[in-house]
Image 1: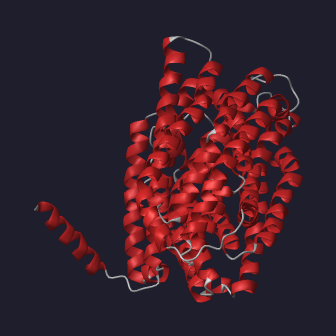
Image 2: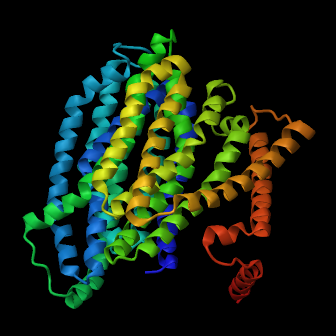
Image 3: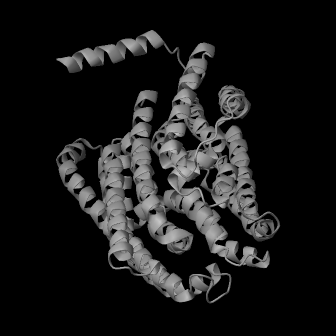
Amino acid sequence: MSDKAMLKQAFILTAGNIISRFLGLIYIFPFAWLVGQEGQALFSYAYVPYAIFIDLATLGIPLGVAKFISIYNAQNDYVTSYNIFKRSTIFMLIIGIMMFLMMFLLAKPIAYQVLGGESEITNNVKDVTNVIRIIASALIVVPSIALLRGFFQGFKLPKSMALSQVVEQITRVLFIIVSSFFVIKVFNLDYTIAVYFAVSAATIASIAAYVLLRVHLHKFFKRLKGLLKTSVTSHNKTTKELFKELLRYAIPIALFGLVTSLYLFIDTLTFNKAYLLRGEVNPEIIYGTYAFEINKLIMIPVSLGMGLGVSMLVYISESYTKGYYKIVNKQILKAIQICTFIILPIVALMMIFKDSLYSFFYSSENIYGPSILLAYAPLALIIGFNHITCSVMQAINKQNYLLITMLLGVSLKYLYNEPLIQSLGYNGAILGTFIGLMVTIIANFLIMEYTIRFKHLYMIRRLLIIFGVNLVVSGILVIFNFVIFEININLASRFQCLLFLSINGIIYVILYVCVSYIIGLFDVVFGKEFKLKKLLLVIKNKYVTNQY
């Protein structure tokens, strides 16, 4: 087990996550133009509770299986690893059906709650109930998909997992765009019908991903048979013993996913109600911008932290099981540094060029969009940290403590979210999330320091260097764009927005790379001497090879 192997898997999973997120962005623009903020709100009313039920349906089994398999594979006991996978298959199907029925029956009460107790604002209870019930059908398939992904991750085969994510997203995006276009533009039907089709895409895409994963599993069987033959004597555990151990790993992971989803779900349940109390006539426009448009943008950099956190779980579990605490500390520090090094520039660009970024992706007419993006963007790094620290806590078997830290954070969000929104509007929702996540992150770091002697002060000093470089580069761009040249572009022109963003993005990357290289930030982040000449030589050799 090496840093190179961990980072390779992290790169593959992260790349799959990023591509999936990027594909997810493709449908947002035409879909947003077709259905408007009210349609986006209706779409979000289905997807936010759907995320909660996915966490309940999967029960943390996928990552639990990945951790279970990684632990037994480290002991060369492939028989036990495969047994738990086989015996989980039927179990996940049953759970999926149960969660589908539960979400279907609870659709109407949820609909009343998200509309602030009103039977209709712009959308009505019937429409909200329908979209929730339509998307619920995906729950029958999703747990089985998640189990297969956990199996491939446990055997350190991230390509199958990443490819399935991309195929699932492509299928979903194509169905949403095509169906919405035909409903609105060809048949001239109401936007609610387009949203009905859009949420049904979750089920269709899930089936596509499941078929792909089964094909990959069939191809892997030949290699698996060889591993089973070389397996050490199996632990010969009963089904009850296997599931008891699996659930010990899985339940805390399930609770982690559930609690994470609760942050946005709390916003969904309280946002409209709090805004109605503020005297807002149609809060669904603001909610659609906040929960759909801006949230989709923010989740792109967040996916980087999520990819690192998920890929780390297998490797840190293995290192911790073998007692390699120094390696565990090194892996954690490396993941956090790389996460910050990559996410922070994206956050800075989002904040500096909020108007042109929002206008390019959505519309220059929505007055709420750029302001929400400015306030929401810093949360990307906080959410990324949260995913990494929570993954570490699971990997070092501190699930019970993790449950306490997460519940503490989400409880603060729940208690203060509605009054904060009444006082500060959407900024109150963002502040509530920030407070909850920071409490969890700080508590996790303190537990990590006590358990594995993780030096968080050493980490902070390193992160300050990254923050400092980004502050300098950001300052240069702000001065040149808004002080010296006072550049004003036509926000209604997407081409001008794209050109402006592209030029500044390229300049930011060049300055960031140059400054980082000159002051040795690459050495700090990657933990070894970074040679620019060596990198250029590798690129040159690859170019020469490709010529022949």
